[in-house]
Length: 602
Image (cartoon, rainbow, N blue to C red; front, side, top):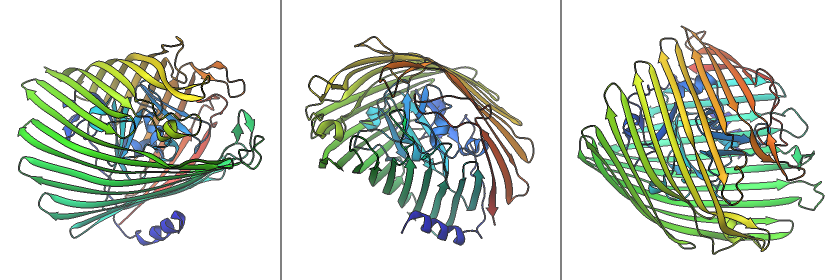
């Protein structure tokens, strides 16, 4: 049964339930789980970490996680046109496949070519998004070379239904609901989306459903199950800069996770077994070169366990193990390219967090053993000093790696089973100050990347030859008090391909963003601004490097809480009708008006 039918049935069954907003946390005292092996206060982590809470997601009316990341420092999101098109993320100038993506602790990176398409990760049911910039291979192994983004689902008691519509036949319905049934906690979230886009064959139809059950087995012990299914069909209006009226791609994701938690005295254990499957089907009956169809199925099975021992009130030691088995099958009209090819990885890791008065130390070490490329050891060390009057400074050094993907290793002709992991050595120094409702932050970073995998046109194979460097500064200013919440950030980024001396593609040197919310009484107004500076790209027609010009995009969202059960809202996307292209040859949508209503039921 398709997700559409399932979600319609659920919509009819949960309306009588009471809904309450997920409480939000201030920056001070915010707990994070992504940047270490134990839940820590954000202010005690010697690393650059940002947290986007559910309240901000609501105020901005963001429907996709990528829209949230685009307003964080040194995070560049590149979408190839309208919603539903391929969407990539560049963290501190690293490649788009070098950021690890976690959903409630489950890795979402596709083993085929290692990356993740951000077009299909919605915000329905999301409590917060945690972003850790810098290498975290000491905690997570491969794919965490540039950073880690983790999406964490929240819990409601009741139900919330959002219905909205706009131009170009766009409409969307999103549902979040939950209930406590004795010792079992049930939660679900999902959405249906339809829309045609602004040009021919620019449609995007998507649906997503997540169900989670948590069973409290006794004091300090719980067992859960998470199930997520997502489907999308997207038209591809351009190919090589030319119209393609019948080119489209279908995408499916199926995910199952079983988490277990046990806690007794100073000991804590968290374990999870998960499986993720992706199916992609490409079709273009008009392709001039005969590439009219291809089908890819990739899957990954993973198991991870982490044990933690509390040494004293603010110090702990953690250790764990992880295993991964990936497999990819790919075929096109020209034949079979991959037939169940894959790789297996097993890892051991540990981390020590220790406090000595005002000084905090984080030290992590991980060793991965892979059946294709062998072993890789990843260290990380961070030191933080808490100064008087709400100020802290920190420095950290880490080494990361990006494992060769199944496609890079085994794809016919270009595949090279002798490939070694891409590696990085990174250093950052940061400081922030918080007083009252104000927060100021400044971070400098330097990354050296080597052994990068590139395609050698002389041999028509992937080889380890590339070298690159990224470095820069991130600055943030935040304010939250009374009716106002403001967050501004700016990034200066230098990137260089050390083999050619040219800047890395699609990375702007200058970027900045502002999120400002004014919320008196029963209504709120949020302005989001994003400036992206000039950056080099590749012309889709000539394949030559060309400058992609800067742009400034503004979005405006307003909501009126008319009653405790009803809240109409409206938003203007790209309200100045800015003409720009995040990726050359793929125009972004112009000004778009969307209106909707949020229903909360008792």
